[in-house]
Image (cartoon, rainbow, N blue to C red; front, side, top):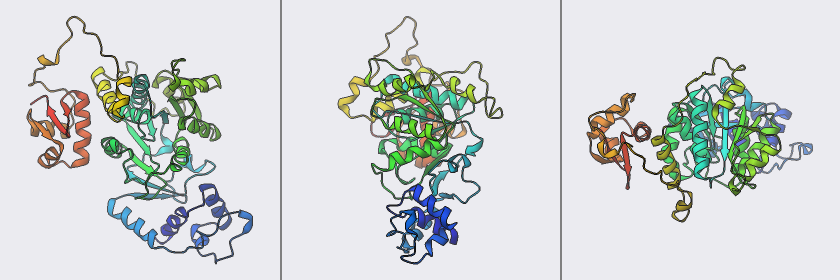
Length: 409
């Protein structure tokens, strides 16, 4: 614990970036040695702002450590064997990683980062969900920034495939940003992990997100740009991926759509074109035979689940922007089954024990989420996760005011 406090102290020095911290560690050998350098004795040749290094106060560090201990957060440092070697080997790895959830063994995973614009089209949402779903269904791991738009769609698709997601945040792991993604954050934490180089309580900041991008690509074997305009943080991530020696993929988009100009430009510059998750996973099959799952009849997102996920993405947008991005309703066809004829006595198959327990408790009623949490006795994180999967399965329907209607008894 004594050594850990010096790692946290170093990581919280304002005005000193990850590269400079790396230079200091190479020069002195450990954060403890850096801490005990006397005022005025830091070498000038490192060209580092020493003002924050000369602040030896540890009270803030103690608060961070106490908060992590109370909430069950893990802290990984560059000196830990569990720190992902894939990330450690980039030019400017974060000195410390805070983790909420269970971080997979990244170096053994076919980890793929899916990025794109926040102001995406229904096409971007659909293809991102599909690629995320197929990657995890075939044994991969999705890395996501959990931002609105493409990031969130890819994460939801991955969870739909019963896969793992690692969310990399530009704020503390206890901050939900954007706030509308609260349920997605719970799901990611329960089925993977939330990670950040920023301590708990650190609020989102414009400068945090470009820095966050290097971690997303650093954890990954490759980066997929699903939909991005010419000016986009996704293109920054793609550039960082190239610097780190990662593969860069891009999804072809409508040549007339401004939201696809950046991703289409990547294709012209040599990015590998992909149209599905299989294109990516088969590239890594020989290198990771124990992880790769050959899915000859890989099921895409069912239409109902895809529409639920798309509607949830659209709900995050300002009201004035929703109409232009909403999908054109599908024309009615002969003999299409109407929901009016659903047999409420027959439940979907393959439900988890938590999902069954929630449906038993709701017993065909419409209830507020707080009442479901209290009455089921399962706990908020598991209830929120189970409700997401039940909604996708068509067993419950979300209504205004955080209320859910059970469609089956």
